Image 1 (cartoon, one colour):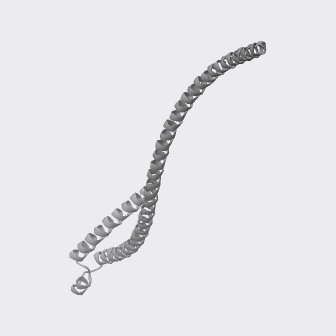
Image 2 (cartoon, helix red, strand yellow):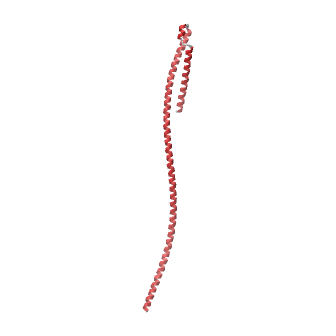
Image 3 (cartoon, one colour):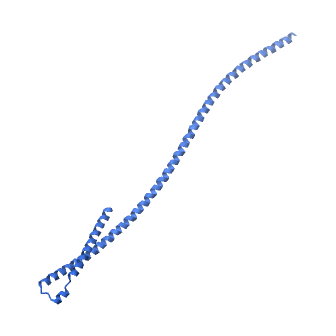
Length: 181
């Protein structure tokens, strides 16, 4: 029995040692649990910060998308405006060519009118000379029939005034067209 008692005592001691070891292990586990809880809290806080950063990134992304869309729309408007400018430029070139052609036509007409007026002036000088000559000579019936009548001279004067008026208007138009260029 003594031996049994020794054995029981020895087993009791082993149980006490085991209990002591379990208490220490338990204490270590509690400390590890506290450390894990602290780490978990830190991870949760980091997770919350990451979520907030992610939300900010999403909002920034949306803003960038909206800004990009506005830039695309502005680019389209600029392209349309550029096209309109090109079309206007083409229209202006066409108008300019037409104006140059009109000025050339008017210049040609003016030269023709000037030549015609010079011919009329020359003819009037001849008629004036003939009239002066007739005034100095004896007027016969035959001589009177060869002379231009007052009516003929008045007709020539009227034509001359019309041509002078046309020439004046054409020169004014040429001046206006040159000023417009």
